Length: 124
Length: 124
DNA sequence: TGCGATACATAGTAGTTCTAGGTATAGCTG
DNA sequence: CAGCTATACCTAGAACTACTATGTATCGCA
Figure 1: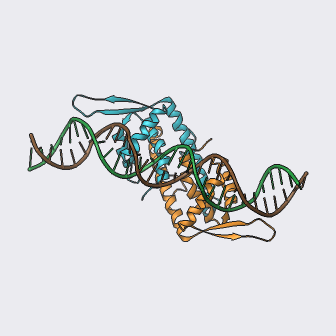
Figure 2: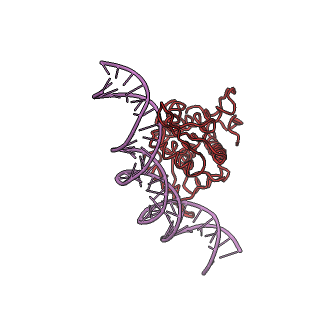
């Protein structure tokens, strides 16, 4: 399944912030993790991720620091900031609102009487 | 709550197709319906909707026909095509995949042991 | 020593989108 | 009937964004 550009764009920031909320990571690892977590549906390239990380840093949502161990490749580790956690909460709320709206439309014809409350979609 | 541009863009097509899947409608009514259904979170302008409807028509997802009753304003009614229904199903599947991925990330730290299967998110 | 994987970066094009403006009419109010 | 608001539709072009293509460098392995 190919995911449309718009959906990829809309989910990119919350995905990265969500991953970093669990612990610091670096570009290449995030890339692999997203491609893995999505079951291969989201096919991110590094050209998508690095500019996004730079933007998040510019906005103050993440911080970076280089790690250059003697016997290994240099990596730029990113960690989420308090401001980034606030942004993540905000994004989750927005996603919840939009998903709720979509479900309202999609379920209107299909199952009008089913009372639906999905788990895991509460506001952060 | 202000919804980001990207999320608005990503949800616009599935919303319109979803609304038209329940019956034909016209631009102005769709506009009101979306603003209403989203609880005011999605604030669409006509400048967003009309070009979108034109694009959907160009792609063959919807068909339009003018209605100009003697004692009323002219309206351009849109109805979904078979191809449009297929597209809607595809979009639902994509949304399900992305939402699933996001939930995987977001729940990882919060509730690792909860087995989650949301209702209403099956592929069309 | 050559290749694939790891790791990061960005210039510039190619594309999209949203603002701002335009047309027109119905219906209400004074 | 003049003026206003709501209804109803449309689009040019500026303003913005994102993705492709390309570049650098090192490690591990055969």
